[in-house]
Length: 105
Image (cartoon, rainbow, N blue to C red; front, side):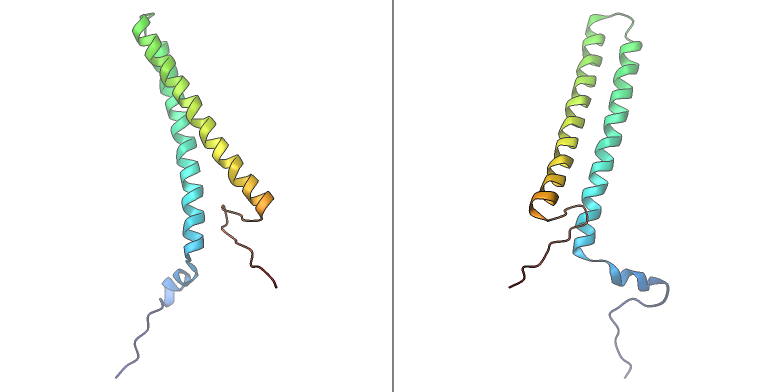
C-alpha cells in the first residue's frame, strides 16, 4: 500500500504556511480596507447626490445625511485602527500580524 500524504506538495506547497494567526491578520486588514473603500464611495455618492439635487430640500438633506454617515463611519474605522495600534504598543499584542508574545519564566 502507498503512503497517504495530508500536506500539499508541488505548486500547492506554499499552502503549508497558512495559519490561523495569518488568517485572522488578513481578515483584520481586509476589513479595514473594505471599510475605507466604502467610505470613499459613500462620500462620493453623497456629493454627487448633493450636486444633482437641484436645490430640493429633501434631496439635499438626504445627501447631507449620507455624507455625515460616511464621516461617522470612517471615524469609527480609524478609531478601531487606533485602538488596535494602542493594544499593540501598550500590551505587546500585534493584532495586525497576530504575534502574541510568549511568557518566559
